[in-house]
Length: 243
Image (cartoon, rainbow, N blue to C red; front, side, top):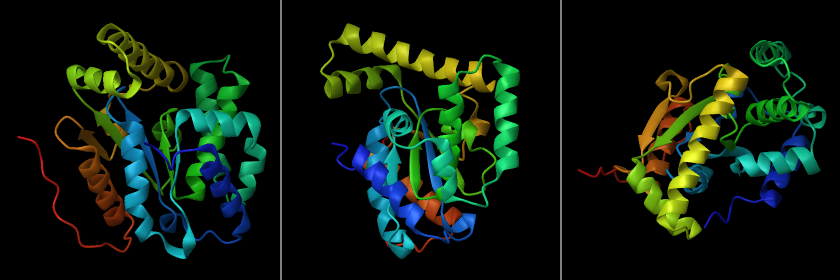
């Protein structure tokens, strides 16, 4: 599970982007953000989505998943925002400055690590071919033209069952973990960005993984990205829905 979500893949992605002097226009380097309810399959869908999109990616670029833990690891141990900014000399610094100023307005005592996280996510999204899971990536990159925003949702009962299976929790542990994680995600967007994570206007697409399997969700999102950024499509069977 999640074999293509690891630190080595993330560092290789950054190094490969740094080696390319001309990344092309923004529309040629799409990125995706995934916001998710706890237990709705964020990492699994992201992993399958990266695999699905790879055949549509030109010039040998590789789709890479950065989940919230990998973003933190890259930031702390390997790459600071100043080095990431070297990826894009034409980086939209006025928009980034506007975002960080707005953060200060909402939360004056914003910690250094959160400001650096914002800049890291921004530069990764601008570089293209990344799937950013969590960390308010959809809000941080809202004004970037090359980013497609997705939210995954599901019923509490089904999400509890998935957490029991994936993490080997008993029911009480799964319920506690789900509630804690969902509350933390809501608080993070509210306190630092002044946004409601459940606002549908923040997303291009909202997918209910109770009704659509992880494989089909990845295809559904992938096809929407292919259409939005005019990537070369491949024939495939239609998505089926649970009735």
